Amino acid sequence: TENTAGVRKLLGFLFPYLSEHPNLLPGQADALCLRRPLLTTLRLGLIPGDYSRTSIESLLRASPDEIQRTLRQAYDNNSLAQLIDRLDDLYAITEGFNHVTFWKAVAAFLRKPDCEWMTSLQPMHDIVRSFASVLEQAVNRNRGLEKTAAEVFTNLRNADDLALVPLWLRTHMFRHGLFGQKGDGVTFLTEEQTEACAKELSIAWRTQHVAGTLIPCRWDLQPVYTMVDTGIWDNVCRELVTTAIIDDQALDGLTLMLYGDGFTTGTDTVGKICDYDAYLARVRERRASASFLQAHESVQRALAKAEGGGW
Image (cartoon, rainbow, N blue to C red):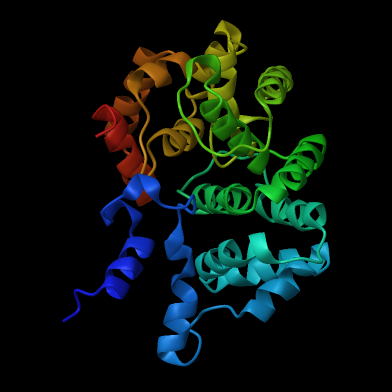
C-alpha cells in the first residue's frame, strides 16, 4: 500500500541515488538538510538539545565577543556539534548579518591558544573541519554567496588565520586540480586565485616554520601539506622536524597530528615531512620507554598506529 507515486517521489527526493533516474534530478545534492523541519514537526517541538532558528539567527548577528562566548559555552557543555549542525541548516538562507564579522569571531574561537605541542588528542581538528564545511555548503546551496565567501576568505587570510584559511585553501586546490591533486566541487576562489594564494602562503608559512611558530601552534598539518604540494617544503623544513622529534613531547604532538583517532597518514607523506626512518625509530624508542605508560591514551594509540604504518 505504500508503493504509491507520492511515496516514490518523496524517497527519490530524500535519497537521490536510490531514485530511478538519479542523474536527472535537480542539483540539490543534500536534500536531507531538510530533515530537521520534518523531525520537529513529528515531535511537535525541537529535538532535545537542539538550537532554535531564533537562537542561530541571534548568534549570526551577535557581537564578536558574544559569538565567541556562545561557542565556548557550547563547547564546554558538549553541544557544539548540534550548534554547528543547525548553523549549517540556516546559514545560506539567513540575511541581515555581517559575514566577515561572524567568521572572524569563529576563527578567534578556533585559534589554538598556545604554541605548545599537544599532549592529548583535541576535538578542535574535527571542529575546524565542521565550521569550514558550513561556508562551503552554503555556497553550494546558494551560489549568490560566492562573492561573500571569497570576501570572508580574504579577510581571514589578511588576519593571518591558521585554522579555516588553510583548510579552505586545500579544498580549492583539490577542486581545481592544482599541484597534482584531483577532485571537483563548488568553489568560491578561482583557479588563479587559489594557485597564487597557495604559493604566497606557503612562503609565509615556511618563515613561521623556521622560526618554530608553525606546527606547535596548530591543531593540524594543513599548511605543511600545502607547502609539500607547492614545493616550498624543502630539506631545511624537513630537517627541522626530524630534529624536533628528538624531544618526546614534539614526537607525541606530531604523531597525534599524523595518526590521531579517526585518521591516518601515508608513510610516503610522513617521509616528505621528516626523515621517516628516524621518525619510526623514535616511535619505537618512545613506546619502549618507561615514560610511555604515563602518556595520554590518545598518544599511546597514535604511536601504536604509527609503528604499524598507519593501521
